Amino acid sequence: MAADFNPSRRRFLKTGLAGAAVLGFAGWWASRDEACTDCQWLQQGERDLLLAVIPVMLAGALPVDATQRKQAIQEVMTGFDTTLTYFPPVVRGEIRQLLWLLKSPLTRGALTGVWSSWSTAESNTIHDFLNRWQTSRFDLLRAGYSALHDLIIGVWYANPLSWQRIAYPGPPKL
Image (cartoon, rainbow, N blue to C red):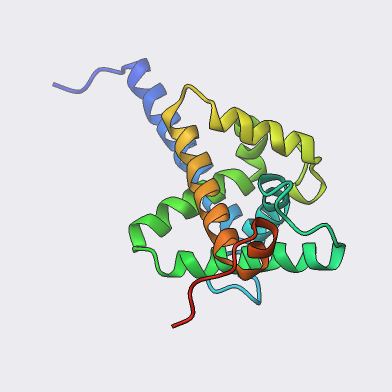
């Protein structure tokens, strides 16, 4: 007996094919970024994201002097990159997915409320996004915030540039 025409089955197949095409396009779009020249792991779009998020997340902790501040932000980003190279591949994969969602124009606005590119985003908009994710009722968003927060804060306070501002004399000399 021949299979009867089932419009819901046909619709299901069309939806599946359309979804596969969208995911394929999104994967292609994400792979267009070239790896940044001074990073081992981070890609350029992820670097732009971190250059926008780091100063907001470390507000009040970074040096006031513009040159020292820029150096500190660069060092935090480099430390973020270096730290990720030591993580297990599974964790790096999860961080890569998080960063892709945050850098992709397709998902950035809907998930963060940051509709402009990260390089032109206002500090208060980024602060609002971080606050929403930190206090979200969704575990996934809170976990994303925690991942960014723990990496950025950990790298910053491991850096000797941060020690003077918190009156930490440094580790004991042996």
